[in-house]
Image 1 (tube, one colour):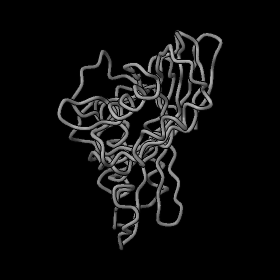
Image 2: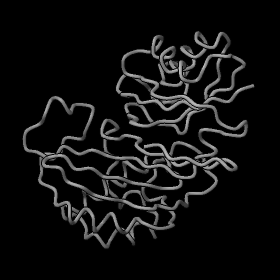
Image 3: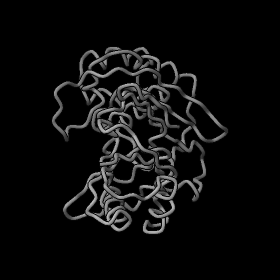
Image 4: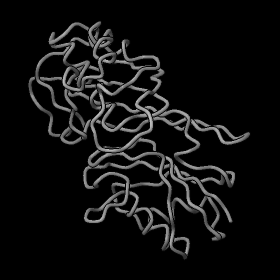
Length: 254
C-alpha cells in the first residue's frame, strides 16, 4: 500500500469548506470523487485542516492510501483532468506509511487579506475583506505582537467544535501593507475555530482605536469573546504555509 501526498491550491468560494458535508459540496468530496476515478478504487483523502466555507488555500496538503501503480509525477495531471477549474493539484510524492496530512503537521500559516481603500475593487470580491476606513498598519502590528506566544485563545474562538484545549502557540503574527492591500500572516501550531479571522478582526479594532494595542493581552487573559474584535468574512482567508515532521522525514510547503 502506497501513501501519496498531494499539494493543492483551491479558490474556496464555491465550496462549503474542506470537510465532507451531507447537504453541501466540499473540497474533500470533490477531491475524493476525482481520486476514485484516477486510482480505480474508492479513495479516502485526509486533509491538513478544516478550512471553512469560502476560505481559500494557496498551499494545502492531503494524503491518500492506494494500491494503484500510477506514477506520482503523472498523478497531478490525471487528477486535474477530473477536477473543476477552482481546484488544482500541483504536486504529488510518496510519503512514509505513518504520514498523515493533519497529524504530521507541526505548524501552519494562514494569511488574511484586507483591501483597504475607500473604493472597492471588484477583482477582490470574495478574495479580500473590503475595508474603506484607513487602517494604520503600525498599530495593527503592535496589537498583533500581543498574540505571539503560548496563550489560551478562547477570546478569539467561535464555539462550533469540541476541543481538548484552547491553548495554542502563535509563532508569529506579521502585518504588511502593499499599497491598498494589507496582509496579516499568522503562524501557529494549531488554530481554533475561526481563530485566525477573529485575531484579524481584533487588530482592526485596535487600529480603529476601539481599544489600545496592549489591551489584547488582557483580552486573552480574560477569555471573553465579546471583548475581542469581530470574526472577519471568510473570503479574505488563505492557508499559505505548512510544516511537516514524520519520523526522519520533514518538509515545508509554501
